[in-house]
Length: 275
Image (cartoon, rainbow, N blue to C red; front, side, top):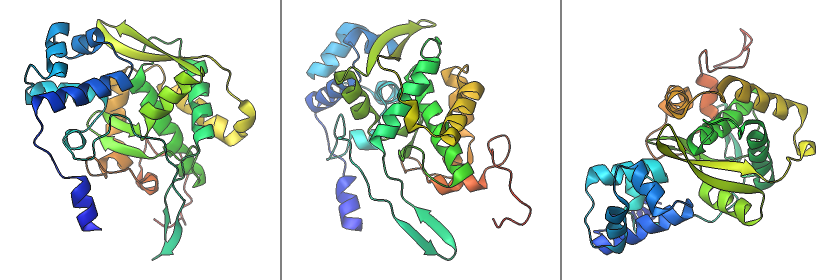
């Protein structure tokens, strides 16, 4: 097990051309133009073009800024098994009882995830602050709040702790597939002079796929958080117990919601409930 993990995390000494190819792949997977990406990190478009061609070196500060915009960790970017966009895969749920601790590995319910995403967009896409960063946090709180209340997974998405906040895995692949299927539209725009990736729904959510409890949790997250800007909602998510208790680049365990305290905890616990 350790040897496989070490192999997957093995770092490469990349050439300028390899770095440029990886940046270009990530940019295209996000649907960003060179102009939009360059503006977001304070570079000129010709400078970014030279980086992508491998004709210009990139310093650590510039690479870090790119990681914030394109949504990758530096370790993953430098690893041997780097991919600009992961294929969506499904994981088997594992339930076990060990020392009275319930262990649950979530199953990605792709149809439910897409439907929740479309529902959030239908409710919020018209708000100018709802870019990709805010959308990711809304999905995170919908999933984790639902699990705290009902001890069941809403979408089954797994979230990784990255510097810019919790992000559902395979998000880029799911988004690109939904764009291809004309379920949503990607829009590159500006918000307070900064490039912003937005999404607009092209279809209506199937409300029959959402039961009353699921819809109630989603609606409450939207009501509480959907008017916040990216900086405020990111700071809020970084103080949530599941985020704080997770190591960088690890998956965030849903079971950590049971260690939440106000204002994050949304469940009323009986005094006789065990910790």
